[in-house]
Amino acid sequence: MLALIGFTRFPIFYSSDGRKILGCECRDEKFREYILDIRDRKVVAIGRLANLRMRRRFVIEDKAINPSLKIAEETVRKIYVYPSYEGEDPLDNVLAMGIVLKGVRNPVFVPLISLKHLDEKEAQALLGISRAKALTIERMVEFLRSIGIEAQTRNLVEGIVVDIYDPEIDERYQVLVDDKGRVLDTNVCIEAETQLYLPEIVLLIRQRGEIFVYSRRW
Image 1: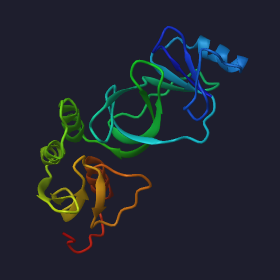
Image 2 (image 1 turned 120 degrees about the horizontal axis):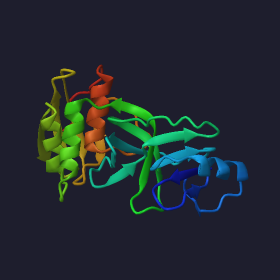
Image 3 (image 1 turned 90 degrees about the vertical axis):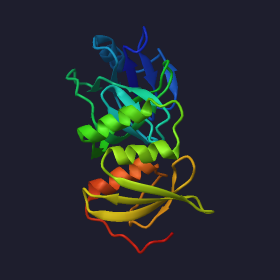
Image 4 (image 1 turned 45 degrees about the horizontal axis):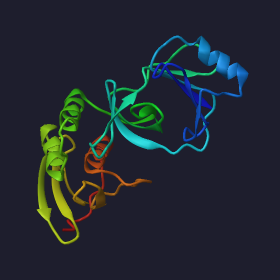
């Protein structure tokens, strides 16, 4: 079980997987009393987690940016883990795995696992492009160029090929995406349990540094 505190007048309780909204009701009296004792605003308190459906987000300042760069969600200011009253600072300036809690005006992302630290240039570039009203593959490529990556696109029947050179790792590689920037294929040896977007895969490849690149595919 977990709860959001300070986003609404009363705490909102959730099931341990974060998917079922229990509202203001909590059968665990000790956990409910613990929640009522926390005076911070816009925080999350975790009692127990199980069977989580993890999501990826770019976490920058107080925003959680969907990798498709279409939605900016809120993040929490502190994370409390029952029964401790010592709130921990959440992950910041990272590409993170976490859970999305609904039920307030805007969805709230709780970052749990860091996948990549974002440097200042990457963070500011993501903030800038996330403000765009219409986010296209062109704007994603614009983001790559703004962080020092050379990127050129070519339209094929299979999708859009992005030819990339990242001077930070001194590697050239290719990524095949659809018109929404979702990765369809790449000539880099990389594993992902869920579908990646163009900004994600490029930053994850940069994080790894040493990569295995197959011959050009397209």
